[in-house]
Image (cartoon, rainbow, N blue to C red; front, side, top):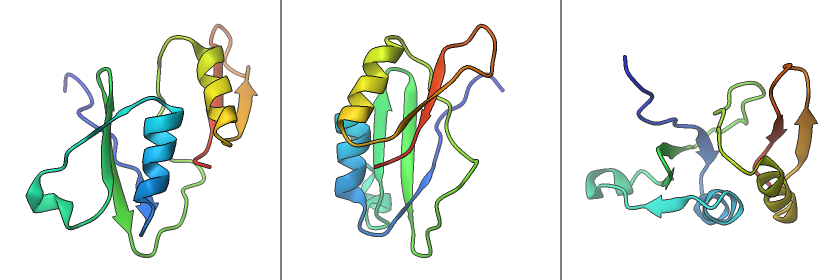
Length: 107
């Protein structure tokens, strides 16, 4: 293997508007069109730099407590402030020496 092609978290049915506000607005990712053969399944695709997220719809969705994408970028303080400004919780984490990081959730 040479790279991760995409990460595919799940979302509840009817969440597409929330996904665009969260990933497009709060994280600044760009929505990318889904192939017509997959569009009927619901969900949304996003890209930011080399990172691609394909959010799939699950009818019996239950939020994962531990599974998550770990995104790396620049401007961690600005990213945390932007997420917080969009209503997402921001929890700073200093448990890994030498790393500045935080966790958040979809609002």
